[in-house]
Length: 247
Image (cartoon, rainbow, N blue to C red):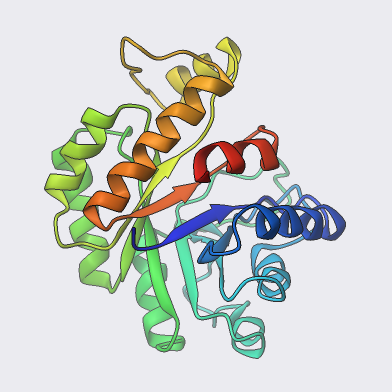
């Protein structure tokens, strides 16, 4: 296998530190930590990434495109440079619940270019959402992001190995981190079906055990193909999930 990344949500500084310690104890050779940027939380992604780099060799903050004003310098640029953060993941971002937060009609490709211009030493990754349209439509978005300067991609979670291998063939030669995440209830399954338009395979079960088994299948496939894996332990016991998938 090439690289393993784990996403940790920075709900607070104390909780993030605890999650980092758990991740380190379970799998010391995780290559880096991904930190999402959730406006409802007190810790911004670049702040969480700086904390993560005290424990792991590298961390990658998520940058929400809609938060970036193209007419002004990147507001987090000095912090990223000061804390030696070497890579970021640019995503579209969800509209804020608090409408006092200003957003812009900025697209991911715009922010990728902006990072390449203002912070050329920072490696910029982009997102792949394999559920928002056809494979042809998503491939077009991927090519635009590559043209803008993206160095690689992180996908939404996969739940079907057949679907993953189709994308793997389509993106041959591109640096991709294949996403996996646990689903542990019918409610969570319904969320993915309704909001993200996921079609689950016939053998799918919304249980921790199924999620761990599938995660290990993806890990084994990635090891065979020298691929990268992106673990998103959403609403799962972090220690149990990592021990199950990374064992």
